[in-house]
Length: 486
View 1 (cartoon, rainbow, N blue to C red):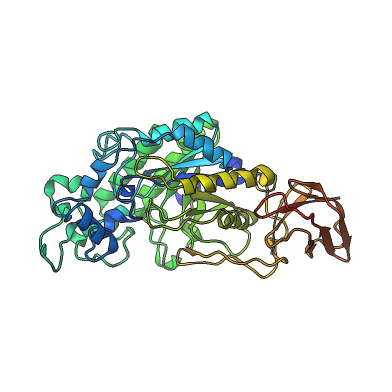
View 2 (cartoon, rainbow, N blue to C red; view 1 turned 135 degrees about the vertical axis):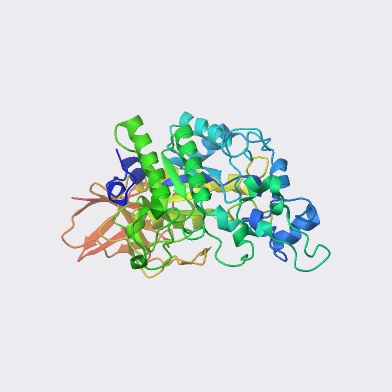
């Protein structure tokens, strides 16, 4: 059993199911999808002049009259069919599934006894998390939940404000209504700071909120016993965006440590040993990390000794009618790069307010499914090879931007399984030879297969492996060679 200390939690081992799964799908979905106007709607509708504020006042009215609580009541999820969606996700290659339990908006997607603003009492009148879990279990997928509540205390300070100009100048937003203080948070002491860093490190959250967060996490863990728990940020309530030596490992982090220990111990009660995964974004402070590193829309430069995860989305984080989606090839490129570096990709598939997905999302899933049907063996249960890549082209993600790149024929990414090395040909062209320079003279190449085709002619001399490619490639996207070593 694990104690709520860094020293104890550092002993937790990464479960094999996560090491092997490589690709998961996420439902980042809730009332903020209702306006179909993108991420952080619950915050930005209270920031005068922001695009979402302007959308809100022109579609629903001023937030002193029609606030976020009223948006929540509009969410119905009337066409939510989790079994149908889960079947699509499994066919598209997913090997674990994750449901949003609550976002920064403090609305819970399950029947909580601690928060009246939940999906059973308001809006859909459904246990969204429970429905997702039942569907995941039907398809034998590990099931996870994400919590974004820890950041909420500071993130939602803006609902205590008012317009600084215009017809409603000085009129308080509905977050000031005492009848709704339990939903909008008792965070008045921070109401004047609406443009600074919105997350909630230990020095801004009050003790009452920290305890509330912990009790909510206990409720979530005890109710669903998830295989996976994601915190949107560092270990609550750590502030790890500064140098480690400024902090002491003391009880200011006790709530976060208690929650992670609860997660691991509940898993151990079920399985004998803990099979749970906890992910956190403590990128700059390994000392605080008591689980798997998660990098939102970001990549490691090289392979990690330990499994890690990147999370991204096909468009924005919540449904946005104006958003441009990633193309299937872009998603496959990210997946290959992440897996070659010992990581997993968690992909958010956007849902409309009614719970359905649109035609573009259906197309993306279908294309991923076709690619995985041919190339799954080069992804699942693989590990990093001696080198991650060949070539000079590389994906670069900056400031949450993930721009597609043009690959050269000399660009490769590698994974391995046993004595087979998988070489993804990022810039391959049909009918041209693939030339790889990472197979040393001392490595005996027994055979080369092109996945989806079969064995192909090759020559291995002087540390150069040359493979003749057929006139037609097996899939529209990245092809892969399986190189069997002797």
